[in-house]
Every structure is written in structure tokens, then in C-alpha cells.
Amino acid sequence: MTPSVHKTLFQLGGISKSFEIQCKTFQEVCLMVRKPALEVMEYLKQANYDHPTIRYILYGRKGTGKTLTLAHLLHYGFNKKWMLLHVPWAPNWTRRPREIAPSISREGRIDMPVDAAVWLQQFKSQNEQLLKDLDLRAQKSYTWSKREVTQEGEPLLSIADHGINRMKHASDCVAVILKELREYSQKGMFTTFVAVDGVNCFFRPTDVKRENKVIVPADEITLIRAFKKLLKNDWNHGAVVVTVDEIASPVGYRDSHMPKYLLGQEGFELFEPFIPICVENYSRKEIESCLDYFIDRLWIQTEEGRTPEGKEELIFISGSNPYRLMEICKSR
Amino acid sequence: MAAYKLGSMIDCISKPYKRMILQKIQVRHGRYPATFIDAVPKKNDLEELQKEGVMKELAFSPVKAAPNDLSSSLFRDSVINHFTNIVMRKGQKKLARELVEETFVAIKRTQLAKFHASSAESKLNIELSPRNIFHRALENCKPIIILTPIKRGGMTYQVPVPVTPKQSTFIAMKWLIEAGKNKERTVHFPEQLSKEILDAFHNQGRVVKQKQDLHKQCEANKAFAHYRWS
Image 1 (cartoon, helix red, strand yellow):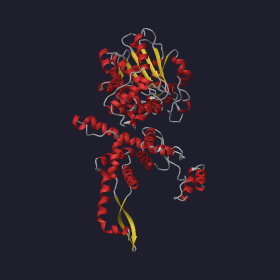
Image 2: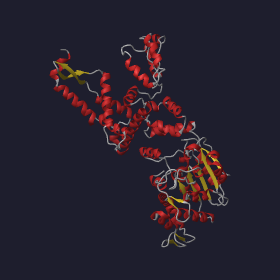
Image 3: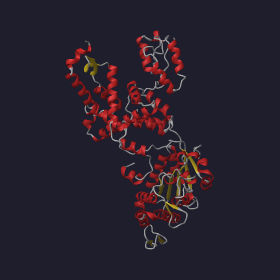
Image 4: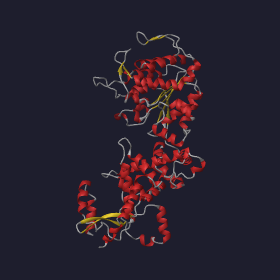
């Protein structure tokens, strides 16, 4: 991945911090081409986009590479010039929102001004070229307040800019943009690629509390509500690729890594029917190739680490788990 | 025999009480009789012993119980293990090991950044292996002569005295760790320690200066050297 593409796509999230630091040390951003990503890419190529959107769920144990597979697919969508709607790590909205405010437009709902503004910046960064080329306009006029109005026919980029400048309206701007893009996509102007990392947190209790210390359910958060509408299959010319992660669920809901358990009843009913794609630990060939890559990048510095016996030991200790291998090879 | 039985009893007691009791045990009588040998975990070492012909005698010797931190891992380095033990506080071996590993990672990253930023000629001179850097840094920090307080005629003199290899290693490690702890609040210990180790590798920095100051003091106190025997 070239540095400019990496910055465009992932500047505001999408790749884990430890991997980013590793990329900086290796002086390049390289993802391994693995079976789950190739499988999804085949399906995306063969899909008939006049039919309702197909949902793909990436699942697997901790540290097997779900987020990086999603990043790979996002890069694929970017190359194909699809509209990217990417939530880098959904639990950031349910666990640590930077700011909470009661919604202006709807009573009882909760807005997240800073998080919404950050998402709009990311949306702009990822889709700037495409939006300019397509020149999409608002199909309705939206009144944000007494003096601020977006007229019908104004470019969608202006709504995004308005949301970034006026954070108070940012969540509503996000909801409007998602709605508009959905309608445009149904007309067949472009394909929309929706990517959410850790979607299972949308269907579980959140850590967000109102002023009276009552927990806010996920449905009452504007941002989450807007994205949930996109996850359904009642629209076409879109692809929804999503990961479910144990870590994304709150602490009491982490007994299994399987999609049906992590999504819960509500989530499962929303996603059914979906295509489940299992992301597993490294195969023999993959792990040997990964170790060779580390040796090439001068990461494995011990002489023992470069011998066949040393490699066997690393494979054994990591259990072929990609994340564990990365952690172990740091100190070898 | 009695010491051996006592030793096995102590293993069953919980840590706080164990510390209290062990403080009272006589240091001169170890828990194992002299015939017991240390465990040799690595295959390479075992093969070497075989070649030397020592295996015949060792094969029938009883072996001491292997310590918890002994493993047959190819990556185990006894010097680094010793260093980790000295870093450890309150028996938190896991934390100590993580800190030392993070230190080596920090050294590796600094050196790799330097390597990639330098020209093809100077690349050959940059040492990338954190272990080699640590070993060389340790060598550069080891004092060969230290001062001990000796009381003669009511006065305590700082007398220069030679130092055993083990003592010297320990002092060097202790100095490195203290230098690593001497930092700003926001800087992490592994980060600071990695800087100290890299400085010591280049024969610069606080720890090497401390060793050189000690040597200078020893030179200055040369006159008292005979107090060692009087």
C-alpha cells in the first residue's frame, strides 16, 4: 500500500496502533494476502448489484486478522472507486464517546458531536475524489437551525463541511449523508461499500450514560441508528462487510467468538441471511512466509530466530496466531 | 539431610512467611547436597557436554529442581535473565520480563530507524541486534576496581579493592537500571533504559561516566590501598 493511499484511507482509524507502529519501523505498509480476503473479493466480483445488498460477516478468535482483512477489502473497494462508508472501531462510539449531547432534532436521542465530526472528516478523506467526480447533490433541503439551511441541489460535500464546522449538527449531518447516499446508490449511480469493525456492539448495552446515570441503549444514539439502517438488505447496489469481535462486546457478553452469539437475537435477525467468513490462524505456508518477511525487514535479529529450529519454536509459542506472532517476534 | 528436608517444607509455605523464614536460614548450608548438579536445558549445551565426555559422570548424578524461569527455549539468554531478575520488584517477574522485552524492542526500533535513514556505507557500521548491543553496553559499564569502606583507627577509609566478575556484572546492571529509573514522570522506564543502554554501547552517557568517576576516585585513593591487609 503506498503511503498516500494509506493516509487517505486510514489516517483516522482502521488499522490497529501496534500494526501502524510496525509499519513505521518496516518503512512500508504491507498486508498479507490471505484466503478470507480473497474469498470476499471473489464474491464481491461475482455479485449482482441489482439484487438486495449482501452482508458478509468476518468472524474469528482474537488476533486472527479480522480488522486487517477488512482493511484489505476497504483498499479493494477504494481501487474499484466505490463509495466507502467505514466505521473504524464501532465500540469507540458505545464505550468512549468523546462528548455526549442530547439531540436537537429528536427528543430522547443522544448525539456525539466530536465523534460525528471525526467520522465526517474520515468520510471526506476517503471519498473526496469520488464525490468530486460524481458531483452529488442534496435531494431535499435540510434546515439545521433558524439561520442555517442546506438547500436542495447543494453538493453533499457542503453538508459534510457544515457538520465538521458546526459540531452541534454533525450527527444529523452524518444521518443525512448516509440517507442521501443510500438513495443515490439505489438509483445505480455507484456501489456503496459499508464497512463496520466490531458491529456486535450495536446490539448490546452501551457504556454511554445520560446525566441521570441511566444507560443509553444503542438504538437511541443517532450515529448508531443511522448506520443500522444501512446494515439492512432493503437497498441495492451496495456491499456490507462487517466484523464481529469478542472484544467489541461488553465484558459479560464474551463467552464465544461465533457470530450468532455475539450479535444477539436483534442483531442476528437484522443480519439474516448473511455470508459468514471465518478468519483463522495462520496456515503453515502463511506463517513461514510471515517469518521470512520479518527476517527480510530485519525484525528478527537473533541468529537463532533465523534458523529452522528457531522458526519452529516461534511457530509453536505463537500457536500460529498472527497477533501473538507479532508480539513474540518483537523481542527476538 | 536436615537442610534438604527443611528446604522441601519451605516450598509448601506461602510467600510472605517464606521470606521471613528464609531470612533466618544459614547461608552456608544450601538446600541441596554437593552431588546435585544444575539442570542443563538447551540441546546444544547437552551435545557439547557429550562431546567433552562429561556426560558419563553427569548421567548418574541427581539434578536440582529447575527454577521457574529456566526453559529450553533457543532464545533464552542467561545474562538477560539475570538482568530481568534485578529489574524485578516485589516478585513481579512477569512485569520485569515485559519491561526488559519492551526495552529491547525500543532499542531495535531506534537502530532500525537509524539504519534506514543512513547511507549504504554507514549502514554496515550500525549494530541492529539488541542483544549484542546490551552485551557490549554491559561490558562498557563494568568497573574493574571499586571502593569499599574499611575502618582503621576510628576513621572509615574508602579503599580501592579489586572486584570479582560476578560482582562487577551485578554493579553494572544495577547502575543501568538506576539510570533507567532516573527519568521524567511522563517517560516510560523501557524507553529511558533503552537510551541508557544505547549510550553505554557507544561508550558515552551517564553509566559509563559513573564507572569512569569511580575509577578516578580509586586512583585518587591509591594511598589507602594497603589498608586492605593491615
